[in-house]
Length: 588
Image (cartoon, rainbow, N blue to C red; front, side, top):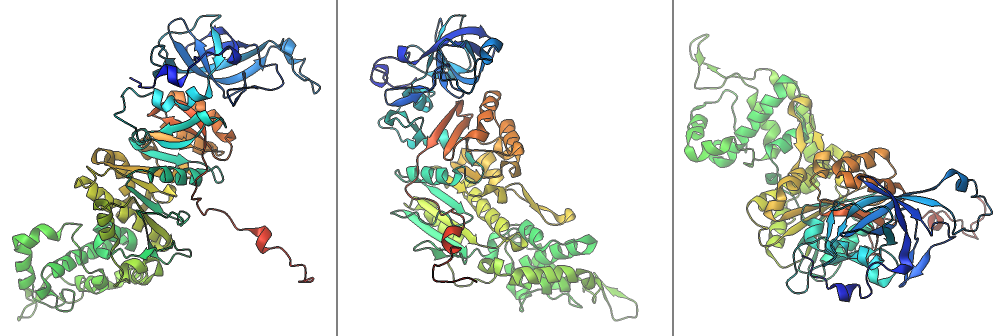
């Protein structure tokens, strides 16, 4: 049960006569109609330092039922036809107006300990009184919806406030925010980046473990003890002390290379797979490949076949995680384009112990060869195929997991989108984290992975149709990472580009203003029925204002997110500064 002391929290009770709104005039399974006694006033009123509309759309209310209090939210206000005609441009307020409101029922409040639960245990009767809910009570909803008591001072994240009043601040436990994963959604300018920065700041007040995939470099200003910055490629703006890292090809799977090189047709795919298998053998038994690749054109099969039968090698040859030298891939593909049997001494005889000469298929692989060479030499993959001196990122991630630092920010802004480089590299990082999670690395170090601009990395599929690869590392973290102590927090301005399967795994959604109909529809489908009514308010949220909805917040809550101390560098170009004409410049 809730361990908040009622007398200390609300010394003068919840139902204040100063906040009286009206009485129940109709009751349905989902809504309560109310005769509003104060809706005709020209403005709201102030009580205990906070403003109350006392009959405004979006306002939380308490209904004094026969057995318990009911929590609701005003969704509609209107007048009957005679009174409607009295509203003119010279209207200055009239307390006698017969205003009607519709209240969406959200949950019930226990009278003895203020425990709040979703659903309705007993419906109100006609004439039951209705009051505006105190801001302090609404701010405490995340705590009042818990059934467990805290041992000592709880770890809470101070996210925002219901009102400007100081006692309406909203604090959320990380278990409820991240426990079933979290998504921060909102259109450009809605405050999504500020919310992400605020949450990270709050986490850093404790012994947190955070990994931030920073797609654009806007979170580069985070500083302090336990904050590490690293980058791949060459970002335009680097964080102070940021270290360049590489992501070696050994971190890639066979499917990654197939997605990158996009073999097509009936020849390229099989030849490329055969070449990768041969290069694995070359790495496991270097004696077979003195030049780095296995020569097959008119060569003997004996040594190669003997090596393939060795137990310690046979089990690894078809393992897609087994590394190989990708720089030799083109030469090995050429060696795979041979006849399976060579010619013996006698005329027309075949020798099964040798490979034959070139079979002419290499000409069908020239487009594949061109793409492989393009990827291997592309600046977008410089940190993968052309980096020999930088430390390895996966090693740094492992050290961070086992060490005492709090935040590891991985900047990907220096990686171009050419050849899907940024998506592939982010997926490799996500897969490494999932592998570590399955190995129980996070069991005693619960870690949250923040993925900024998540729509660029989730739900992606690249490669030709016959050899398409799904970049699903972060989707798998959303589906199974929770049980291993690895949670994910997605931030995106385009929810429609994130698969519904992933959004449905998000226990908490922090939703800023969404103006696109498709974005709102995706959010509605990912939430329960009670949250769909709350989505009607999403297009009209102010900058920095967000609705917290989801499994762990059965009562939707709208708050103003506190401004972060370390602001993300997400401002657009400053035209007034850079386009202004200098007074002494003269006319062009």
